[in-house]
Image (cartoon, rainbow, N blue to C red; front, side):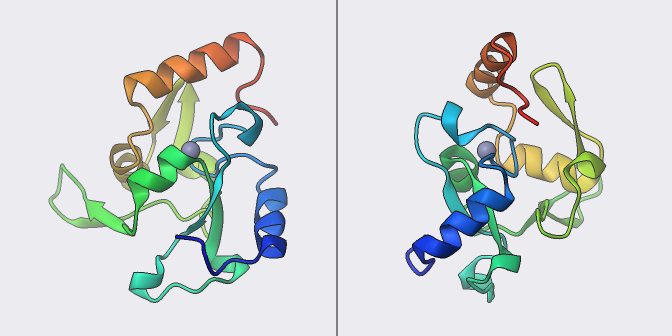
Length: 138
Ligand SMILES: [Zn+2]
């Protein structure tokens, strides 16, 4: 999905994110596959391939996010946007509870659900990385 992002722009996006996924925070060095450049607002929805619409994302976050920009809040039934790494602060929407990424906003809750941030295998991976002092890297 990032075919029109130049290598130079990818490098810029990766460096800005300190080579961590901007959704689940895993370092590219600890992921099984190279992280990808995510269009926060997908091209399908008119998003551009410019730095202010791009985020660094691990393969799993990027795959689960797909072209989604919003979901439905399960409590209210209302549309709720997903976390936007360029406009939002991670700590305003999530907090780490051990290896679990706990949402602290409706936007955070939708993002955790759609991106499957707390799938059992992802929690297990974070728990292992924490035991090695590799998560979260700051
Ligand atoms: Zn991720």
